Structure formats: structure tokens, C-alpha cells
Amino acid sequence: MTTRLLGLSALLIVSATALPAQSAQIIDQGSFTITVANQRTGREDFRIEGTPGASGALEYVARATVVFGDRRLTPALHSDSMGAPSDYQIESRGTTTGSERWSGKITRGRVSARINNARGESAKEYIVTDGALILDDDVFHQYYFLARRSNDARMAIVVPRRNAQMVLTVSSAGADRVTIGTKDLEARHIVLTEPSGATRDVWVDAKGRVLKVAIPARNLVAQRDDPPAP
Image 1 (tube, rainbow, N blue to C red):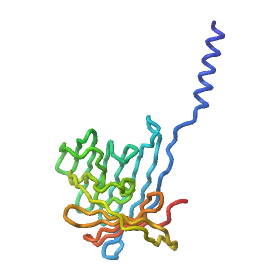
Image 2: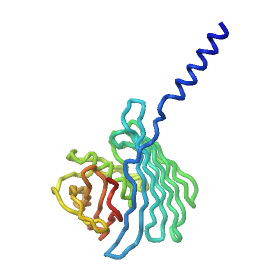
Image 3: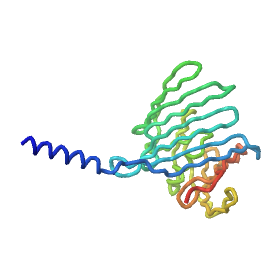
Image 4: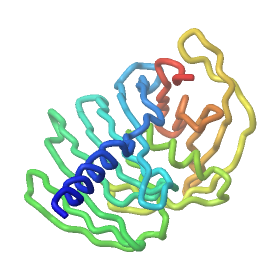
């Protein structure tokens, strides 16, 4: 009996070792140069990874470091296969604006957030549309998740540091080309319209990876520094 148990234990160990690890795969990574009125004002370095979840569909982790003006932002997003967030945090540090940390859970159409800054700690809870996406101000790789849902006519987004929700109207401006570095890349041009009528233009490649974002009302452009990996 002892020999059989030892043999079974050895088999279980070998079987567990033989199972492939569910390692994260890189969905996209790179950097954007941010300009305002054609003047360089910042840079974003980002990485989006996908890991198989319990259902087998990919779950995403997206992180970045954004230097914009005198501020440094470090967002971190966890989402399901459709980009709907489960939790999100972002830290903002500025020489004139001080430091602030926003962290929250988004479940069943409800945001529960904690904000820490020089005034202390506060909590916010509010209702949002189920499946709403995160789109933080001055963070540009997050448009990847909006591009994946660009067939929707309308799209709800949560703007965390404003503790607000906004519904964008989505339309297609058709095929276009964007010059990244020395390469001319084919792109799909998506137009997002805010309730105020202000627009945001997003160009993505065939895989939905963001090449360029333009926000005319702010005279702002975030453009990728290098073409995405093949």
C-alpha cells in the first residue's frame, strides 16, 4: 500500500509539473508623444497584457507611466474580456498640484472609490452603466478598449478622477493612413462625440491597437512613437 501511495504522489507531482503555465501575453506595448498646440508636453509608456480567465476568455491588465506637463500619472487597470473594469487605480504627482491616489472597484454597475490626497482620505460611491469602460483624462492607451467596442453606437465611460460618467456617441470616419516614425500605416478612424458636441478622434490599426488620438477642443495630439509589433 505504501508503495502504491508513493507512486501516486510521484505521478501527481509529475502531472502538475507538466501542466503549461497560463502566462500573460503581450497585447500591445509602446509609447506616445503628447503635444499641445504642436508643442511637445509629455510622453506615455504603456503595456497591455492578457491572461486566460476562468472561462478561458482573456482578462486584461493595462499599466502606464504618463508624464504630462508637471504631472506624473501611473494608472493600472484590470478588466474582463470586453474591457469592462473590475478595479482601477491611478496615482497623480505634480510639482504644483501635489499628490493624489484614486483607487476603486467597479462591480454590478457601481463604483466604490477611495481618494487620498493632501486633504486626507475620502470615499465615493455612485451608479454607472453596467459594462462602462474606464477612460481617464490624459491617459491614451485606454482607447484600445473603446476601439474594441467601436461597433456600438453609444458607449458609457467612467472618468475616475472626476468621479463622473459620460456617454459617448461612436461613429466611423472610414479608412485612413497615419505616419508613425518613417512608416505610413493603414488605420481605421473612429470619432467619439461627447454630449457637449466636442469630439475625440482615434486611429487604430487592424488589430485595434491605438496609433493616434486627437482632442481638438484641447488642441492635443497623442501619437505613437513606433509602429506596433507585427
